[in-house]
Structure formats: structure tokens, C-alpha cells
Image (cartoon, rainbow, N blue to C red):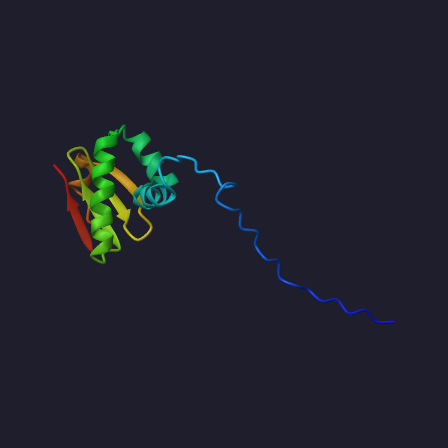
Length: 122
């Protein structure tokens, strides 16, 4: 004995205008998605280095760094050296991830390789 099973696609039920409720969601999905894409991630390694070296970067500075990394990404930069008054960060612009961090004194004696861009913030 054999059975034939036939599947039919479900048709979506579209509510009429009186059944739909509009909620004011702030921010919109597009804005939230755009903001999430612009936010820098900090790798576990970089977080450890920031803590070990007592490097603190305020939200305003992080926002500026994030903005500049996004600009670098749009220009085709993959890995960038970001220099601030107190820190040197290596950032993967493609993934928008801080890879490592060191204080400026430590960075003065370093040779940086495998970067194809630099962002200098004072």
C-alpha cells in the first residue's frame, strides 16, 4: 500500500487595516541595524590588554574611533593602526574589531606589520 502526500504552500494571512496596530518602536530596525554595524567590537585579547595596561577610553573617543574605522573600511583598508593620545590600537576594519591595544609609550618602540592604514587621533 502506498500513500501519496501532497504539500501545499501556506498562503499568508494579511490582516485588514483595522486589525493592524502601529507601535512606535524607537529606534527603527534600520537605524538599530546601522548602529550595530558601526559599533566596534573588542576582542578578548584586546580587552585583556586594555585592562592590564590601565588604558581607559571614554565613550566619545570610542565613537570617534568607530566612525574613523568605518571610513577606513569604506576606503578599502583591512587592518589599521589607530593612534590616540594614550593608546595604540590595531583594528580589523573589515570586522570592525579591536585586535590588540597598547599604551603610547609602549607603542613608540614597536614595529607594526600587516597593516594597510593608519588613523591618528589627537
